[in-house]
Length: 250
Length: 250
Image (cartoon, rainbow over all chains, first blue to last red; front, side):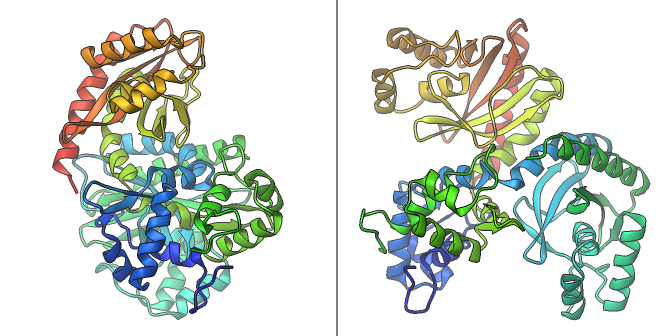
């Protein structure tokens, strides 16, 4: 349908355009979008005009565009991400009230950990996670939980690919990573000191629905903080989230 | 670009398809989507296939489709909605800790109040608001705040249109509504007993950025609860949100 000479559908081109926006790049000109999306300038301008007409993008007084509230509404209203996040939020707040650092919820998406929610104490330590941001599966504690419980095909693909070091504690050796994943499955928790940032430790536990792991619940702590109280708080919250997911099944 | 015989762009048709999803309709078949979007079945099937190929929609084992995590990510990562909501969330939690009912954040979108966030106490009273859901401007306390500070053109349009009763306390008389909006501007707060549900009162205050009202912060209380402590908590939180929006301007 409506394919360009290069075989992309209009939808692919729209996705490439939306993909140029980020937390550091909330507004752009159509020309910047064209350059960053790799689309011909005339194509980018035409699609941006159509996206503005439909409310997916909004144009400000300086003729710059940003993601529209209408897109936000369309993407969230019926989303499984919103359902998961709404069910998890009250229990994340309970964890956060105990831990008073960062409490996060992540899912597996396109071979990375995608973060659906993050609660942070105003005085919390370092944490690079962002809502709607991603981290590599082998590096973050959430990613390790998701990878440990992923299909063996994905696991072998990640183990076979180069494992980049994000922090000084990232496990980059495939054999050590295999052992770590097996220990995450056995113990039900991933603890990753320095895997993302030298000064922080990630602690994550799985959340299951209908027998499958659907998300990882995690905290990020200063490196010197004992992890045991957080593990207990996370595991208690995970049980309550699982019960609520069961009660509110759609 | 790629317009159909009826003049719709592909993007319009995609928006119509995404618009068929809701909190009560998280998964659908392509045929149901075709019927609900009013698109010819073959068109709906073709666009749904393209949307699945790009990750905007996801197909489950039973060949039903749902909104994709990829769409959620694209819509949120660079969105002003997410920025506003992230800045507001810690202060909403402070309000919620005092009020222990429902605390909400809404923006004006296409002549309705669109809710960006809702925190609810497990034992809170009735509240029909949903994240990514909407309420009429003249009926909800958030809507009244947004309408009171909207451009006069929008205000006159709403005052001239039929004003439906949502709850027993909805103000449906244009002259009374005009007076109410003027009082909301003067007092800086909207209090709406029974405007949405007979048993609840909405209380909302404006949040300003660069001199304009960009959102409404509100609580929903049981009808018998005194509103004064909530007004104080909302106004204190609104000041802090405004200060943080100023500090984190993009």
